[in-house]
Length: 432
Image 1 (spheres, rainbow, N blue to C red):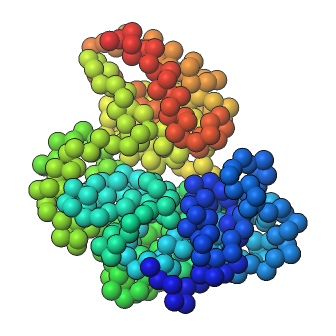
Image 2 (image 1 turned 180 degrees about the vertical axis):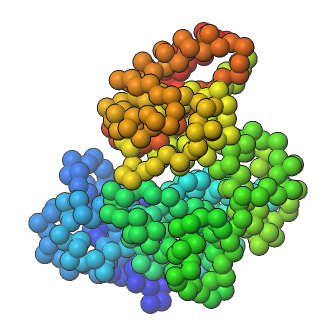
Image 3 (image 1 turned 120 degrees about the vertical axis):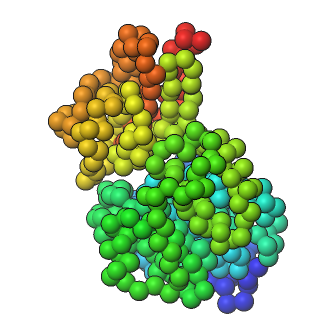
């Protein structure tokens, strides 16, 4: 653990946001610095209640560092003016992690596929007796890991929010899987969103390695305009490698997951992982909850729960590989999001849009494929199962991939995915 000249050691620190990352940051720093806590929810019930300071107190204290949770939008929060005035003091738990540990890290970002890629790589390292820790957006908060040794490797899933707020963090291995328009409401422009992702490469030094999608237009433009210190590998994901012939796991039928594996193979080669053992790990991978998760597969029906999908691009990755699809979507459409599949591909599926924003989706899709709209998810499923009962000769697929944010009706995508599974049970129990 690095203490000498550490920018977070024996400092006056404000931790803003008391979710998992905020609490773990406090527990990690409480005996190393003078730590104060704040959360927009002043009614928060915690054992740390006495440590939480009030808004008017914050303005009277000269903090050395401010650690904020990625979910906080500095343009729209209770400390907005204060944070803007003290912007250079803002950090994340990833900054703290990097400041205290010299360990190798593999940081994965991108619009789609981060969680799956991070989990497979972590599993592969564990299965090959490496001390891997899965942290960040997936797994444990960065600062909650214990018993870290020199051999510990951090596999980090990093969002654009985390990278945008991080100021000293850097990673030995950086991965940018893909970039499509996302989170524009928060980043204000596509340019800002791309810049946030590329902070991961910009922060790297000589002797580091970066892996980026070769066929990605936004990534290519950024690389061509800037110079980076790390060695950059442009991963070709469009051609199928011979290694894929040995993969029998249905989870990797979609182009999106094949792209994820293209990166896994490339990084695994650099890490000198055993190829046979890696294939075995991949074939045993069961997928992540609500991410292209097959929840029912019998007779003439397969049901896939892809609640994690919050953009058209993430849904398209799967749709283009399926036939006879009843595609269920809804939620809050992303700003400037576009549906790009061709009319030839669109003949393979019909869209069933639910929720209060259904007309926004309808305007985007109505001239591209068959579309029906519903007030809620229950109504959509009732109609779909009625239609499927007349199509028993075909292998039908219900694909719940909302292509929009969940916050119109749900806490998060997990809450939405759980709700879908709950409703679907009464139909699948009848089929069994």
